[in-house]
Length: 202
Image (cartoon, rainbow, N blue to C red):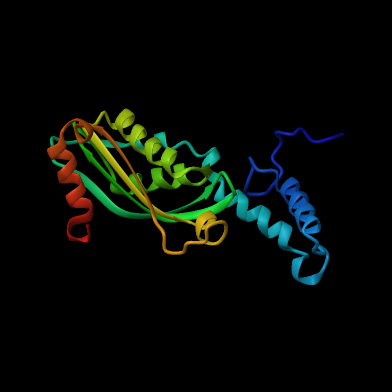
């Protein structure tokens, strides 16, 4: 009897069909002229399958619960976490883009643990993504779940689909931003958060 397509197919990765990925990788190796059975490549399909399960784990990780564990505080100044490292996979070429996220918000009675911001970045980044959408998704999540007065998200990343193929320009960095609430409507608030993020580095 054939297994149901939704049945867990990989130990430790219940939502990922590891065997199907392995078969696809073998086919790719053969298609480019390699021998998937030679010693150096024999275990590659299995390794790639496990890697994809890890890199795409955000497809099955809802970031919202991380933001629902907040503290009620009267603090009404900017909270900023800079340089949150992440890696994601460009959905256009399935090649990595790697960088850092800066997240700031102006609370309105709700303050979240700082590690929760990093967990949100992790969940949103670990799926086929584009940097522009990732930036907006993080900003919208914080506005919705924290009911903040304002949210600012700035992401800087290097894209291997640009640095190792195509135009091949290593060292290039893409910067995207998403401003919500007061950081969008008040120039002074936007200037303050950007100064806190970059300071003398600008």
